[in-house]
Length: 96
Image (tube, rainbow, N blue to C red; front, side, top):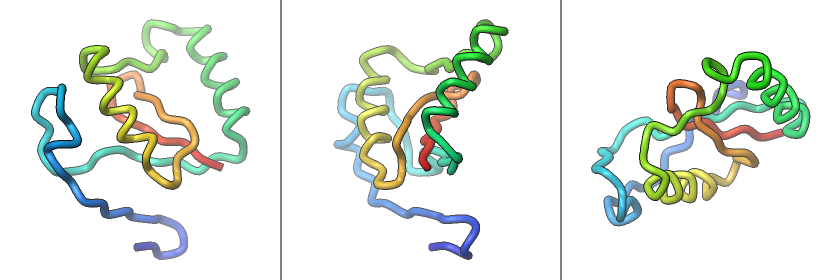
């Protein structure tokens, strides 16, 4: 669904998709952001994390093995091009 500015993507949810992770119930999965350039975004992110790595570095709120499953699911979103967690562990998907 879209109003021309904001797009809401509704996708099927199956617990089987999260095999090997802690329980995650249905709900908001991730936020996506459209940027002018994914390469520019990555460069800006590297600059920010270099200046203040403790507070600006992406942090995963889950175990590395769970992170692989969750990030794999996130990468399956048809809009995203670059997936990461924000400093608080929220899932983000960035695209041009």
